[in-house]
Image (cartoon, rainbow, N blue to C red; front, side, top):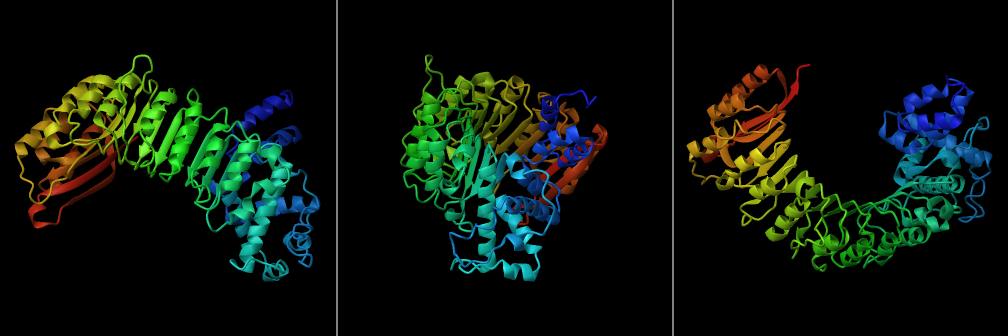
Amino acid sequence: MATYLPSDCLSNIFSYLDTDASSLYSSLLVNRTWCLNVVPVLWRRTFYMTSHSNFSTKKRGQLVATYLTCMAVNEILNPILDEISPNATPISSTVVEKVPTPTFDYAEFLRGFDYYDVYQAIGIWYAYQTCDKKQLMKFDIFSKNVGDSEYCKLILTRELVKYIVSRSPTIDYLALDAERKIPPDYWSFSRFPGARNCLSYLRTFVCRGNSNKLDVYTSLAQWCNSIESITLYEIGDDDPKAEALSSLIQGQRRLRKFILWGGMSNQLPQIIHALTFHGFGLKYLEFRFCNFEQCQQPLDTIAMSCTEITTLKFIQCGDLQSNITPNLLNPIFPDLEVLDLQGTQIPSEALETIFKCANIDLRNINIEKTESRYSQIIESIANNCTNVTKIKARLTKDKMTQLSKLFQSCINLESLTLYGPLPDRLYIFTQDASDDILINLREIVPVTLKELALKTDCAFTASAIEIFLRDCHADLNRLEFISYGSVWQHLNVIKKYAKRRGLKIKEQVAGNYSELLMRDLGHIIVEFENLE
């Protein structure tokens, strides 16, 4: 069959295995036709595969040796030190063994890499070299900030990346690690021959660290216009108002996903403004640990422009001011499926508006830091978001009656986690009331529910847990709650439930509080799995 399949079909089939090195290697040995079609796929994500799969350090070192051999054969290694020192030791004959000419120029097949993965692979290869070879690789001039061996690894990493971008026609994935360990001079792509043509096809860009990033932002803004996903961990201390980054964001025609960790208050206004240019394309937007003090009503600006967002996350971003109100002509996030406000506070009226506009599309909600004044939060979800499958919210004991409405309306609910003020030493129990809350829910729990966590100021006796589990129709695989009484009694009840349902207890964590006035309270976490 393989004899009659055209190469285009074979290449398309093998492309689905681009991270399965074992299967690709087996296919490589079938015949010459398969080999010619497998090699480009096998070498497409080499640094990713060797970093994230079960490859030994020796194999990772051999990968680098193969690339260096290609460089030596193409006479790339000999002149790499000319710009540093005319008297530097030639390293072409020292960094690689005398091996046969490679069958392919493997750098031509690489389509994406993480700069730090390349640096680590070089370090592994260097560690396998003999002391004599390491001595021969010492350079006449090296940085005062790093040792000679570290400088050698940085130089080789830079030159290997230079070689890759000069040979590969397309790099669609690029990740940079802008930490102090790798100075920006070593990944300044504006000085790399062929980088403009190679990186103009970039689709995914990831950049970590807070070192200088201005050069890479400026270069990519000039070269790229089709980036679909940008993920940044810190913007960079040399772009104080994020003007270069904003230019990069605005210049993209297909931006679908934007993630930012750690933006400063003076940088975020420019970022929010730049994102408004992608109103009809942006689908995924996430901010983590960002300071929006100088950015007035960022949520309102995004809601007015980015109308097709399906995932919206503001995580640990403090208080966000918002005056969002329902608008029939311009709905607020009408396609929203995931809303995550973990550690972030927005006004209750704005939250209510989002629920009403997103309606049945909203499936995943995390609003654990909601202020207590928004007392009807669960009821609002039940009234507006009937297709929700996952909820994390803040709820106190006196508002738990809303769960009846939730369970009756949201029949597809799979995971419910409720946070609240845990009992303290002065907590006065009305134990019957707490037990009744749980017992009254037992017959209306959706059959789809898999995870139930009540980490709030309700503590339940073993008898209440037994009644709940006996009459509950859901097949739970995770249960977490505050117990009242000996945790061992609760665990015995849970073991009987597991045996009755044919489940195995995969993990259990249980213990009573040690403080004198809280010894009747415990915390129990149990995970189940099927015996089959």
